[in-house]
Structure formats: structure tokens, C-alpha cells
Length: 404
Image 1 (cartoon, one colour):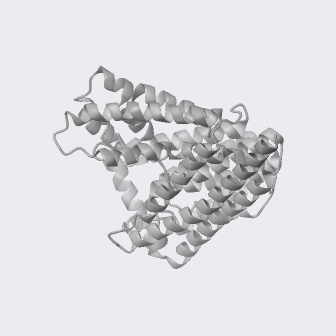
Image 2 (cartoon, rainbow, N blue to C red; image 1 turned 45 degrees about the vertical axis):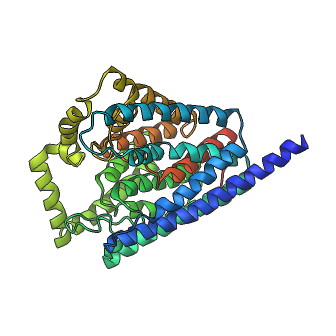
């Protein structure tokens, strides 16, 4: 018994160390990526190096503190990798170009990075004091990035823009590289503070600060999420006071948008989307033209498929990426891999009670944004954040605790 307690203590220390240091290292390296990319440096993918190191550490923690849950995960991961390699071999045999196995294995790794993180640190939920410190650090990272967004907006700093190399698109993502990654980051950030502020009733001005910064992101995905959030809020909080506050915020935001759209910068921004609307229609504009990838690339993917590929997949994501997660997951992993991928999500990251309204709303929003925008399922940038928030939801509802 003493030996087991000693191991448990060491596991909590390992999980705490991994979470704290990974939060620092990932955010700083992502910030370096963003700055180097904005200033047109040839080499800017610094964060891949650090995430590779931490992936080894996360896997080491799983192996060192192995239990039945972790062992089952490792077996499932190995099974999925074997299926994936089978699908890749089948399509590589018919490829008319030099097929890149390593790059596609890297894509596979991104899909399952979130689960590697989860199964290495999930038991930190049993150590409230350590988990509180991890959550406070994550909150501070959210606040730092939101502050950078607002500063970038006020002073029009190019390296903090969402689309640093596209003058006709507007928005500020702070230190988060790539607009799709930024959309998921802000989605998690707003959801986290909303959950604390309204569901756990831990009121804080930080929610409104975060909400304001999210309006400056400039991606269609985040505005879609905020619209869904507004609908959920009206349905879940039906009292008069809440409706008055919500309507007041809508009026203030609408007035702010009205004055913003009078600026020259906004006119360029609007002209781009109006042109997209006329050329692609409402759906094409909403998915940024990805609907054309569905019609143009799917025939090329399945042209060399046989019946086995439908079960185990076979998509070269270096050339045939559709950028809509449900499509890419199916073509990459097949029917078996897709089913097991969702089984993993709902038995780990999203294992909380789906009958609770906020939980259902959060998961629905996650998958809705993944469908329209892509890069949610394979987001290495946001894997740690979504894991920690999901563990927080589960722990707070399981024990009825209020983490500060």
C-alpha cells in the first residue's frame, strides 16, 4: 500500500511537471513560430522540435505509470497505426510520384497527439492543488494572448495579425500561428472562461476581456461559434436579467461594428468577402471554398482505392487534403479508424456527462467547427489546452468542486 501511494505521488508530480512546462514551452515556441513567419523567415516551425521532445516525455509517462486504461490505449494506438500503414501502402503502390511516408506519419501523429497527452496526465484531476496551479497558468496564457490581440488591434501590429501576409483579410490572433489553430485556441479559451463565469458561477471580469479579444480574431469559424454560444446562452439562461445583459452586449458590439465598417481597412475586408460570396455562394464562402476540394479531390483519392481502403483508408495528406476534418479523417483512416477515433474521444477527452447542457454544447461546437473549418482533429497546437479544459469539466462535475 505504501509503495502504491509512493507511485501515485510521483505520478502526480510527473503530470504536474509535464503540464506546467509544456504550457510554457508550447506557447513560447508557437509565439516564435508566429513572429518568424510574419517576418518571412524561411525556417519558422520551431514548435515541432519541442513538441517532439514532449511527446517522448508524455509517452514515457504513460509507460512508466502504466495501468489497464493506458495499456488498452497503447494497444488501440498500435492497432490504428498498423491499419494506417496498410492504407498508405495500398495507395503508395499506385502513386505516380515519390510518395512521402514520413510526412503522412507526421499527420497521423497529429491526430493522436491529443490522446497521448490525455492518457499521460489525466490523473492530475485527483490532485486539486496541483491542477489548480496548472489551470491558473493556462488562464494566464489565455490572458497574455488576448492582451497581445488587443494591443495588435490598437497599434495595427502586423506580426500579431491572424493573416499576417494577406492585407485584404483582417483580424488579430496574437501569438497563435495559423488562422485555423487560432480559431480552435479562441474557441477553447472563450468556452473555458464562459464555463467558469456562468456554469460554475465563478464570476470574473476576465470573461468579458476574453470575449472582446475573440471578436478581433477575424475568422468565420469563431464568429460561427460566438453565434452558437449566444443561442445557447439565451436558451440555458432564460431569466430577464441575463437577457437584458446579453442584449446590451449585442447592441454595444453592433455599434462598434458599425463604426468599424466605416473605415477603409474594413471596406477592403468586406470587399474580399463580397467577392467570395458572388463567386462561391453562401456555403462556399462559409467554408472558404473547401466545397470545391470535395468535388475536385475526392475522385482523385478513391480512384485507386479497392474495397479494403474503405475500411482502413488511404489519403496522401501532403497532396490531397480536403481541409474539412470529417472528410479527411475518413479518407485518412477509413471506416474502422474513424469509428475508433471517435470511441477514443468519447472515452477520454470527452468522457464527461453528455446529458449536461454545456457539455453537449461544447462538444457540438467542437465538431461543428471541425466540419466547416478543419484542422481541429489534428491540431497539435491546441491538444494540451483542450485536454486540460476537458479534464477540468469532468473533475469539477464529478466532485462538484470549484477550481479557482
